[in-house]
Length: 370
Image (cartoon, rainbow, N blue to C red; front, side):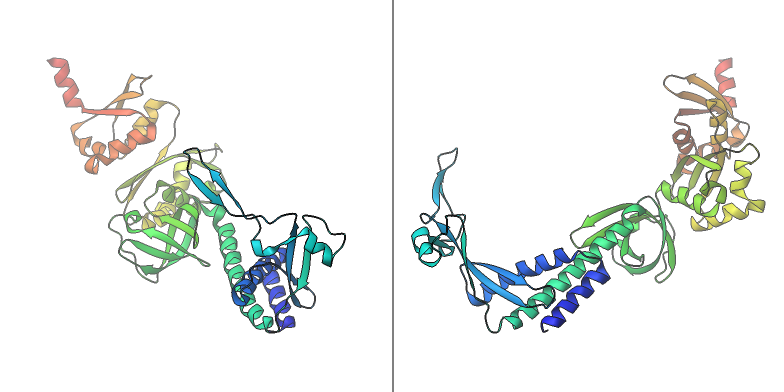
C-alpha cells in the first residue's frame, strides 16, 4: 500500500462508514507511534505526522527540555509502605537545558527538540499498521451503527429468521445482527423450525464487548400487546387502547380494551368479522387462548368481564381499600372461573388488580343456612 492507496483507503472508510476523518487519522497516528517504537526499539518520545492530501508519513523523535533529569521518586502510602513512582517522562526522552541550548540557544525548560527519524522502510510497517487500523475502525463503526439502529427497538416486535440453535438458545437473524431467543422464552409447547421466519419481542438491547446483545422473547406479555398493534389498525392508530395485558404463556391471555371513539366497538374491532382479526394473533400464539375484555372503571363490572369465560358471575367488593373482592359462580361455571391450573382466576386478579376469592352459589347458600 503506497501513500496514495493509504489515503484512498482511509477516505473510503470515512465515506462508507460515516466515521470522522479526525478519529481515523488520530487512531492511525497513535498506532504508527506504537509500531515505530516496537519495530525500531525506540525509547524516545515520537510523533507521527500524516499528510492528509498525499499520505506521506514522517516520524519525529523529540526530547523534552528539563533543568534536571526526572528519575522518579519514592512515595509513602497511608500504611507506611514505600513505592517508587516512575517519572512522567521517559529518562531517554529528556535533555538537560544546558545541552539543549547548544542546539537551540534560546530554548526553555518544557519545550522540545525534534528530529526526523523516519526509517527508510517505514512504509512497509505503515501499510500493515494502516490495514489493522482500518479494519478496527470498520468493526467499531459497524458496531456503533448496529447499536444505533437497534437502540429504539427495545419493547418492539420484529420479524427474523431462525438461523442457529444451541443447547439454551435460538439465534434469530434480524438483518445486520442476530438476536438471542432463550429457549425458556418461547411459548410452551411450540416448535421452532430452523430457517423459518418468526415474530419476536425485543426485551433488551445491550452494548456488549463484541457488539449489541439483543434479547428476545415470545413469552413476554408485551409480545401479545405488539401482536394486537400489528394485526389491528385501530389499536395501531390509537382509536382502541389496550388498557392492560396479562398473560399465562401457552395457556391464556387477557386483554382489557376501550375505544376513544364511541362509534367504534373495541371488542368487535379486535375480534373481527367471524374472528378474522384475532385469528392471526391466535395462530402466532400456538393455541394460547385470548380473552378480549371491555375495560370498565367500575371494579364490579370490570371483574365480571375479567372472569370470562365464566358466565353469570356475581361480584361483591369486600374491601375497597385493600382491593379485595368475592366472586360467586354457580357450580357449572366453577372450573371455567378457576381455569387450567388456576390460570383464569389468577389472570383476572392481575388484570383488575384485585385479590379475588371465589366461591360457588351452593357454598354461599350452605353458609347462610348454617
